[in-house]
Image 1 (cartoon, rainbow, N blue to C red):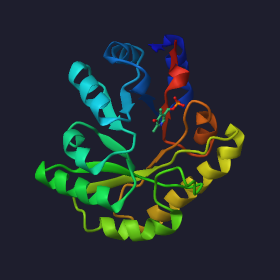
Image 2: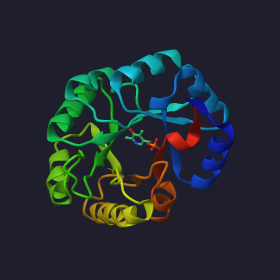
Image 3: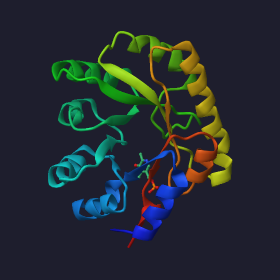
Image 4: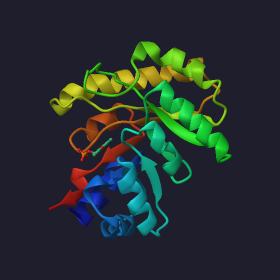
Length: 214
Ligand SMILES: *Cc1c(COP(=O)(O)O)cnc(C)c1O
């Protein structure tokens, strides 16, 4: 697919002051440079190999986020190359991130993925688990929890509003209980529902299809 320059500029304006992370799984490095030329400076890849290929080819000023399911054994390939990992969804992954962060002498910024709609098919922690997770993270001094990430169910956009709202409420509660963490980011909303996510407090939207054309 190719960058739709008009759409990128319009969406960048619309989402301000939230951050637009362009989902780059649909495009190659050439198009990533076009995104940057339009003013889009955050790129989110969801597979490790594709990320590494694009990262190596890309020589601009933009920032990379990892937004997809991350396997434990692949953490070591990306840990020193991404600014934020959106999709931290298990204790095993937390352990490996802490181990690799320490090894590279890095502070690693993460978001915790919440399975807010309790979907069998989706990754992420349950709401009830979150306090246990936050307490567990206290033993991980190399990890900085910037906030939460969620994937809305694939239903009518307006019906997802409640899940965005519940995620924001969870973030607010965690922020009060765990003041030692920044907890200021809410990564939610994609092409079909980002406007609703923004109304409900998204600070980062991850958008793919709406930025591109065939
Ligand atoms: C592809 C992808 C998006 C963007 O989805 P679109 O529907 O193309 O906007 C957002 N988040 C993740 C994790 C993705 O893999």
